[in-house]
Picture (cartoon, rainbow, N blue to C red):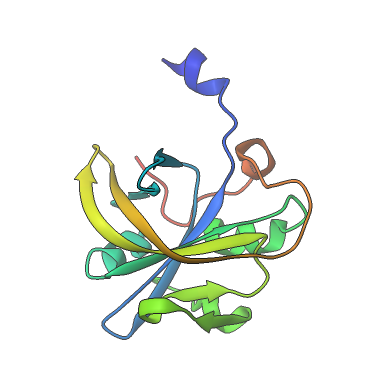
Length: 157
């Protein structure tokens, strides 16, 4: 399957979660719209990730698109772990619906209610029902090929 997977170049996004007074966020490459009517979106979080542990107790997640020129933001959320760093102390964000952490400088974002959690192996899929969304900065979106040099804060074995 490596040959097939190596040809994919999905958009990357930052997913944030808030639960029990704790905030977390990570760079995600496994995410997609999964229904048209009603609109649904699924993000897949690594079980090794701090964000996954917070998201297990969350009611909502926020999903953010980044532009290619936001490498610093991608490195913060992809290369640092919330087990050691408060990522939110380094950027502007605001509290969205359900207490979700929304990044101010995102190219686009939405907050969704978690409807289902689906075990997919080393990642868990969170099916989201979008509640509120917004547009931000313009420009080409950050893709997997733009983020390949980021060493994961919590690498998957």
